[in-house]
Image (cartoon, rainbow, N blue to C red):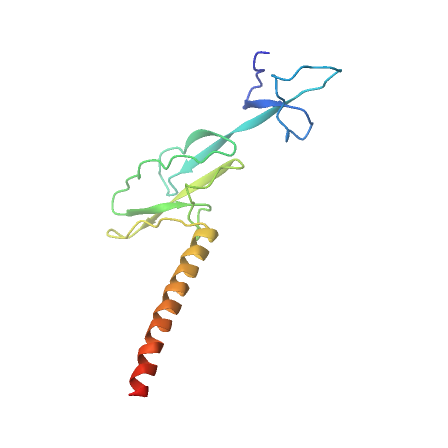
Length: 155
C-alpha cells in the first residue's frame, strides 16, 4: 500500500505488532486475517537561541526523531567569542551533535571573551573510552619499563 501520512510525523514502516518492533514482510503470502501497524517517527523542533539580550529571534530547525542534527554555522556577536551550544541558558553541559535527537529541545549559544576556544561536547561513552585507552597506554608504558629495571638490577 501507499505510505500513510500524519502531520508532524514521518512514516517508518508497517509492523506485525503494536509496539512496532517486527517489520512486516510483504513478500510473504497472507494465509489468515492480519493486522498491520504503522510505525512513525515524530518530527521534532530544535530551537537555537543566541542567548543574549537584544539577540535576534531564535531559529527553529526540524529533525526526524532518532536522527542527529547538523551543527549550524557558528553565530557571531560583537565583542564575544562563540564557545558552543549548551543544553541550558546558563550551562554547563554542551550539546553533542553526534547524538540522535529523541525529543524537542532548545540549544543556547555560549559566549566567552574574545579569543575563547570553542568547546566540542563528548558523550559519556566517548569520554570513558578515551580514559580507558589512556589508562591502557599508561599501563603498557609502566609494564615496558619494569623489565628494563629488573634487567639493570640483575647486572
